[in-house]
Image 1 (cartoon, one colour):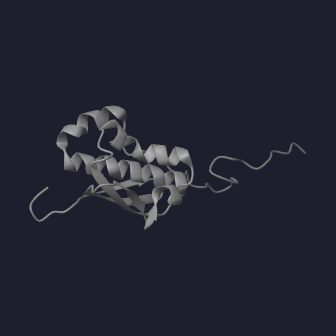
Image 2 (cartoon, rainbow, N blue to C red):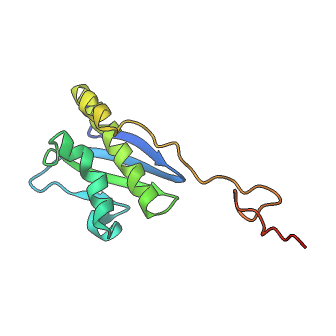
Image 3 (cartoon, rainbow, N blue to C red):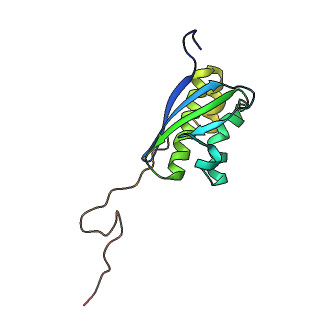
Length: 134
């Protein structure tokens, strides 16, 4: 951190969700705040909570940073994935030596999967109308 920089910032994306993540030096009790709410309030599902805190647990930096997130778009799981990528990217900004374990764990790769577009003549992206012989 340079002398006039107070936090590390990065962006994570997944599907249609975008998360702007800021890592601040932790006080006595480190906390994760998402859109002004506590993590457990914003992501009620335990799997989403575990997913987004995984980069912090892997690098053993859970108690070193307060995490502040602004997340928009997508659904709940997509937003959790975006926050996870944002946290991993911010951690590498904070300490470049954390990049290797995060990359090995698969946290530095953006998940490219997204909803496929609907095609003309079909009901959905691939579902065709029912075939009738007569």
